[in-house]
Image 1 (cartoon, rainbow, N blue to C red):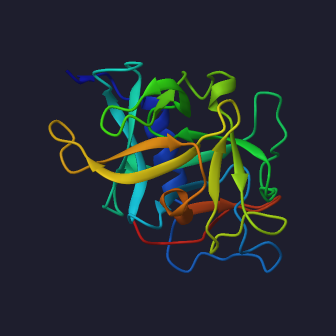
Image 2 (cartoon, helix red, strand yellow; image 1 turned 45 degrees about the horizontal axis):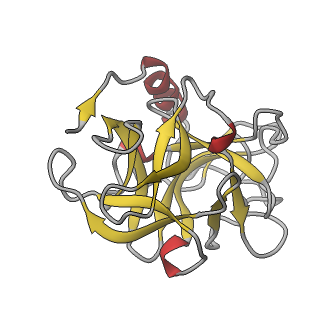
Image 3 (cartoon, helix red, strand yellow; image 1 turned 90 degrees about the vertical axis):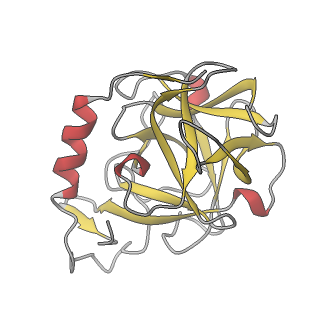
Length: 221
């Protein structure tokens, strides 16, 4: 059985504030305009299955019982926004480009929980469960993901992988589809090897520039 909790008012307020900056024609600087930066809020598309990384205040009915993470086709769902943050020791100053090989936390904006994985089986494919964990952006060491990409920095137009620091699995989608109460959403899980199921691309979002206001990299909501 799945269970639902209460949404985070603070996360909703943050999202409303950030989306106020997301307007058509928003300017970007020439320097680093095509890079994903620390503090940015964005949606992530699995390029193979064409779904966006998603979470919501619905808990798994098995495994850890933590908040579920799925993939959705809709591009306009506010529950698909994630904020790029550094580890608990910092290391990701606002507005600086995210480096390839850097460990980051992905915090779900509306619920304040971090993208997380651990040694529980995922409910549909029996891969490694991926959940959302913590309170107000504070969780534990199993919230850290290394950005795997080519070159020096994470480029918005490039595909990247997210490899879990603690267990080495890659954030993946292989097409398994849930029934009620989240019918049509796809399972997101961890897989031990890099393959076509774990490539992701930055999509709609607000990309922070150093010493400036957020810039609208995409205006499609």
